[in-house]
Image 1 (cartoon, rainbow, N blue to C red):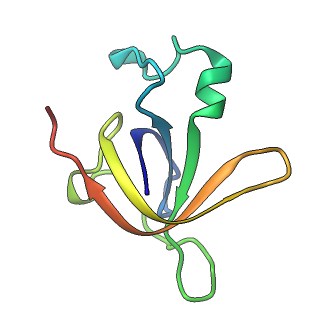
Image 2: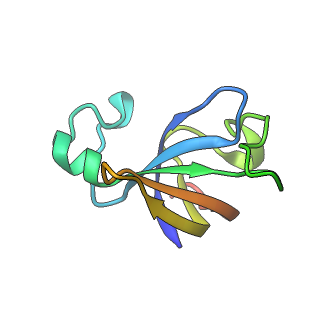
Length: 99
């Protein structure tokens, strides 16, 4: 499982990036004030895919309370590419209530 704040959405697809809670965010500017290395190291792409492995064709923003800088926990299989970028192919998501 991975928990983080939502940083970006991919329009028209069930794909978003989340950033580790330990990375500083600036509220109105998101993660623009964060240390670039910490932001890169703490960012994970989250994808929900269909049976063929393609990202589902609907946006996540606004669904079930999912919004920018909201906190989510996702469960799924995590992998890293050759450049160290992490992707979670998620099968479950929990949207944390705002605190």
